[in-house]
Image (cartoon, rainbow, N blue to C red; front, top):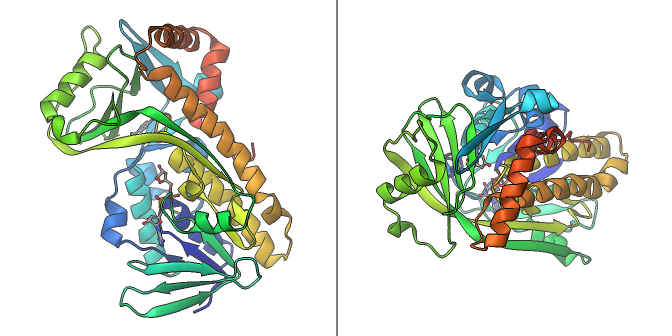
Length: 390
Ligand code: APR
Ligand code: PHB
């Protein structure tokens, strides 16, 4: 087997990269170690920045997103007694869309299987080799158990946080890892209940942070801050709804309850591994960096990375020019660090540490964001997504 770009990992980053390359005449093969059902069933974040929507639409995978996605023009920020609204179009001229990552992945898989480049599910033992040369290869075992070798010009490591690619970049020397583990986790539920709010609500509360999000006009997605040591078995549906009622409370308004379809606890961490390249191996998405979910940047960062990477690889493979490939890691990391700061800042402003001095600072910051136009604009610009060239 031979292709131009061997892509390891069929999450949103790998699938979109394959699609963007195909549209510009570069072939690729996507190797995914899980099954199609597993990849399409994972529940992840659900907010798309303006540039992510534009990218998916331009790539021809935005029809259902435009039909079923919910365009949102702001968020509510709340603390006891106050619910303030930030109006994104007025502040920065952009909006965001509610559309689950699960749906983005289904649309990308469908496009790929309908005449797109090969997408192989259920492969194992994936090992990239010779990435310091101009003709690397990827060894793997296919779904039938047969050993295979995929020769290529470039390897894209889009295999997420637990993939094999980042370790190989580290083996090239000069790797630096930056990490922050937060003393918080999110307990998230997906509920068959119509959201009782027009916009997402980010709530500061003495008991801890809560977030009211949604997936559709009939499905809500809600989160409460918990200690990372909490066990999901100790949180009955009733206990979760009660915590949401308390933390999101506002006079004359209530949370809509309904059957809980899924619940889980998510750890929160920031992680950046540099550089995002070794020779002919390029990293993108969660393979290189992780942000805490506050602000929903993970998927959007992955989309921004592969948009940049696709342009760089087309130039490298078609025009034989190395400039954009050489600039890729630094340029992608500049945006990664901006989003890492924003996610850290949102997390720091909204989560209870248990320290009363911290609490007063957080409330002062929230008041400022909701009363000063420049402060609100700073949040709005970052939340709706800075330009990919930034
Ligand atoms: N070989 C092949 N595939 C692999 C391997 C491997 N050794 N290791 C992991 N994978 C696959 C995973 O099964 C997964 O489908 O790589 C894919 C990586 O996808 P994601 O984890 O979704 O990462 P990415 O595409 O970068 O998307 C980033 O995902 O984690 C969320 O919040 C994050 O929204 C962000 C988005
Ligand atoms: C979600 O809907 O899953 C979501 C929304 C906003 C966030 C994080 C997650 O900041």
